[in-house]
Length: 115
Image (cartoon, rainbow, N blue to C red; front, side, top):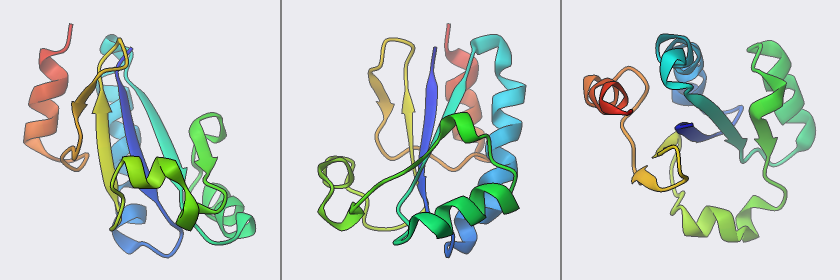
């Protein structure tokens, strides 16, 4: 299954703005079995929990990155600003290292072409 992953934080207005569009993407491309994964880089776990509850995010696919400033994952994905998105193919290959935002026509075209 393809995966659309985003790095976000509670204090990031653009991240919060995009949350409903990410859910919309998942619904639009459910025939492609699109999954979404969110990774919070908030400083405090409590901030993460508050945001997940407040914005009604799916708790099964939201993760808190502990010690994000020292995280190899954050370095590997070159997360220096938020939000940052990635698109993975059904075999785990990175299809878009710096994926367009959820509302993007370019992203929707890529998703439509997936098998």
